[in-house]
Length: 79
Image (tube, rainbow, N blue to C red; front, top):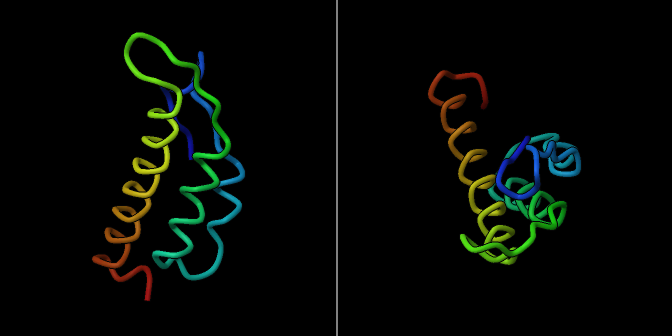
């Protein structure tokens, strides 16, 4: 998992990746998204506050993981 817009360069979120083991249910996905949010320390700028960017990190990682799990379930890859 990597995100941009929270530092000078894209950031890989190993702590969030580490939480993605076993069955990927909503609770595990939320835990990974929370770890992603806690891993970034964006600064405020004229476009958005650091707090807003952290909140977006949570939501965008959560949405991406939900979509990824949905795609694998559609293809029968995840039971």
